Image: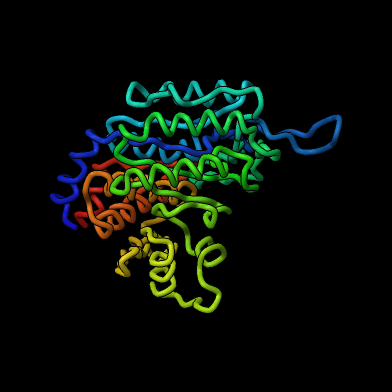
Length: 338
């Protein structure tokens, strides 16, 4: 795909209305200056002194950030946060993204705590940031039915006005986040009622629970959760078999090998990853791929065009160190032109 074709597709992003439903997290970065370290008198352990704190929406929020920087006209987050300090920070960060983000269907609830990734970073001059052990805040009990009903009702009210829905299930234990069985049932109903609308799903551990919607998974998730046990080859045949059996499109990211697609009609495609241009940080690359696939497909692009765009976006993102980055159309165009 040449840059003129990408720019033609990207011009349509501003007309899109996309809902992002799933587990919105707070990504909190603690920047540590090792030159200011000291020893605790009480414990004798080294003390890390934090000199800067920065936060941004993560998880499904990373997909939202990418859609926003692509220029998508209207983005509706559907999810929840806790009534806690992290929730206030997350909601404030989402509100600060501007009027293109509609928070009407983002719920504050006292029944959940805010999903938070706390990422300590050692900051040294002249070298990439070094991430230390992450500190996570998660929910381990099942999401209350009343909250699932609220999320499901939001989906139902919005479905007819959307150009696409992106779904991210980020939790380790099924049913403890936004994407519960009830929400999946609602997505199945919407997919049946609007078969031409893109619904693109991604799940860390529960992709096999998803209805017949388009899926984006990484290679490890695909082989662990979806791939037929008797066909573990490294080409597109297992993906095509799964796509045909499910009756929906499938995208499988393969790290340095790129990304492949398989359609319910038995067609397949592939786009290679771009060469590495220096130090990299792969955090956020998968979410950038999801966002770019969704935007290009919703704007009328083909599977191949969506994959090529996604690979360029992923290349942009992995070269942004110490943050969960995004890619703009201008940054993507520069790589497509190479």
